[in-house]
Image 1 (cartoon, rainbow, N blue to C red):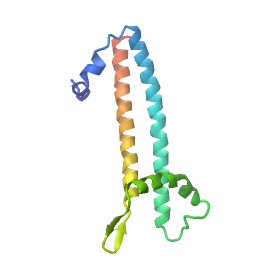
Image 2: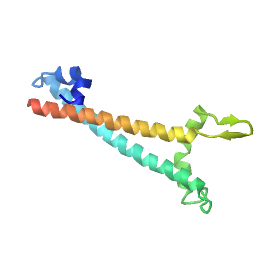
Image 3: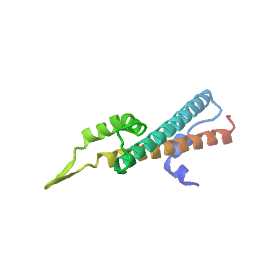
Image 4: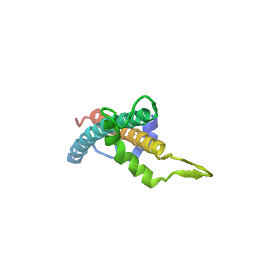
Length: 135
């Protein structure tokens, strides 16, 4: 018995896979698998843009406010403004630390993890359905 069966035995083994409901569940599983795959790709691409923006801000010879580097600033500004609104800078004596960008990137990594984890569950569900003979 694998790790997956220990975590979610009721969800995947309570179906009788020869019923109409099983076909509907498989259709939804395939739809959500495609949706999760597309979301994973878009989040991964946006994460690359965010990392590029932060890198170009720290390189002294590149001006991040002129074309073509301003593209990264324009595309990622709403995301970083959202996290700056949620997490104001930490003030320590005479300095302040801006950690909202790091938290925003970690939130993106977390959403990538959950997309991947959910897609693995859906793939396992489809494999169980195929093994039961309903596909």
